[in-house]
Amino acid sequence: MTAPRKSTTVELADAFLALHHLVRKRVDAAMTAAGLSLSQSKLLALVARLAPCRPSDIATQMGYAPRTVTTALDALEENGWIERTPHPTDRRAQLVDITAAGQAKLDEVQGPKRQAVEQLFGVLSTGEQKQLRELMDRVRERADD
Image (tube, rainbow, N blue to C red):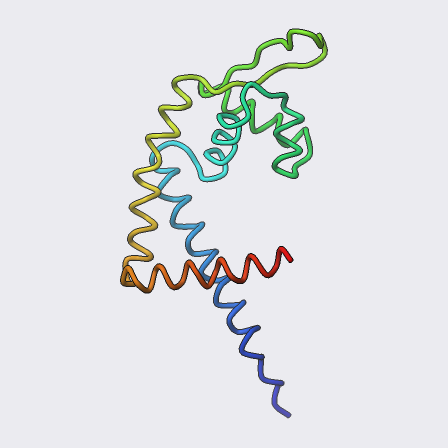
């Protein structure tokens, strides 16, 4: 007895997930080689966008447990990329902000990220890239309905 054939949409989803995994792996490797992993850069970019902010705000935005965010912030602080200061009105809380060194590091890894992505998607013409983007946007918009 043969296994049932996958539907075209399931095959498409499997191919998309495999590509997603490949892109993440290549981008993370390129950025890590430049000194800041993909996950660290996402956290640092969020701090830059929300700053000054409480660690709990970051945890909420990322959908992570506060302890997980605290551990990740500790590593960023050890590298001098963020700083924590006491909250001005809540003595139990701290505020997190990106440092000039953190912003410089975030800017620095954008080149390796761009190179990795261009290497992967460079096999597509500009028109094909635009079409792929439009198709992905359409799927995402429908998912939001």
